[in-house]
Amino acid sequence: MNFSSPNLLTVAVNNTLTPFTLPCGQIVRPVGPMYPSGYFRQELIFDFFNYAGIHRSVCLLSLPEPHVTGLLLHPEVVTRLDGPAVGNVWYVVESSANNSGFAAANVSCAVKIFDKDGTIVFESGSSCTGTADLDSPRLWWPIGSESQEVGHMYQLEVILLVDSHVVDIYRQSFGLRSVKVEADGLYINDKLFYFCGFGKHEDFHVFGRGFNLPLMVKDFSLMAWTGANSFRTSHYPYAEEVMEYADQHGVVVIDESPAVGLHEFPNETLKHHQRVMEELVDRDYLHPSVVMWSVANEPKSTDRQAEYYFRTVFDHVRKLDPSRPVTFVIGGSNASLDRAAQFADIICLNHYYETRDNDGIRSRYHRWSSHKSVFRFLGRVSSGANGRVFHSL
Picture: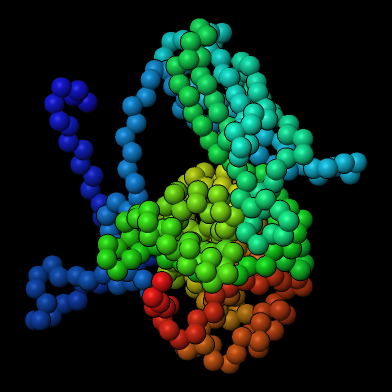
């Protein structure tokens, strides 16, 4: 870094898709007199455009030394038989102090937790590791919850000190809520939640998939206009600003990986899939709006190799985050032949009236109902408008 003259940062982006990438694709190299030497084309196994480029906001940070390098945070709601629920927030602050030659005895952390109104509800003097117990916590509730506070978020503030001097401050938002799956559905804070929303996309015909704050607000407003309370991040992780907005407004999210177009299941793809899920869980773990992980969309889950592949992926995600259910989204898979649905906590079905599913959603539901003793269903129903609805709002 040169502080006295301009600096140039170059990032190379490649959106070539192969059976080993997520999403998956194929490179086809036709041969013949009509094709020039070296000609190839990209074939996609999904129905949206694979934009290339930097889709997200880019931030350059100027950090002090030492500084906070990481914050491990685990909030949970603990139900008590003899009284109201309590909130437990376990935290570990990591810093570069040890690597910078500072003695551990000279490094300390002042930790505070604020509620939505800015009131301090927890305060700790010096330890960089601890547990905060919040009595009568203000839970995060989804939009549409009667007589409940929607979208309440806490903020944990870490002040890193060396020899009692402040060297860095780091703040992290989080929410407190519980999620569980029962035979009749998914419960948020012990209340049955009925999903009513969209399988969304982030792109816009003017500028592709680059993040746009005003358009994000408009999208959320349109969803609210329809009465929606949730969406699935089909078929890739969305911008962090989207997740934060969902947190603040009580919109429930099914957080999906970019694993779309999975028709082959080699070990190289499996290892990459596991890494992608690690990155997704690590990034979005603290968003209370995220109530479920979706590991894939419409894979070829009747393939014999799909059983080992998805057992491995589902087990891996549950080790990363035991607190949330895990699902995947089924397209035209046959209920009696599917090899991956057995590992899902909740079954998600995509139903297309205008194409292959004209036998009706009820008959399809009943076929999948007999697949397992207990099933829960979510999904997407397409009316034949090819997913594009125009309005004047």
